[in-house]
Image (tube, rainbow, N blue to C red):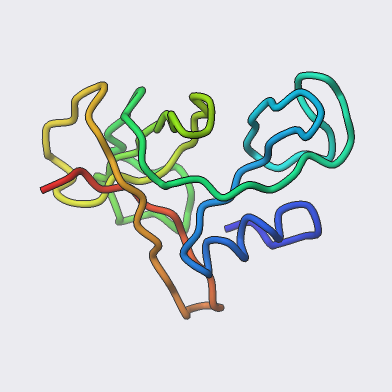
Length: 133
């Protein structure tokens, strides 16, 4: 889990408050994630942080059988999804798909963000994804 810094603080604060924030350029209106000091499109400084609805569609996915990071050892299998956010101009972000790790996953399936609050080893919130029931 990355440490919050001045650049990513609005994102992590938003998750803690149950809001998904991504950046949008005030000059050219381009959307972007992860956090950057400049717009990827027009190179204007200080893109604005905008709240978006945490709903999208699965653009791609992967079932992880053998986690490579030491802190995830013994936690496989799990599902990682690349979610496309239509409200944010088709911006894509990665996350875990909750539920049965052996479930069928379909490209284009709708997903909703879930804010998962943790207290250990320090207080933090993660954005996870779930399919409608």
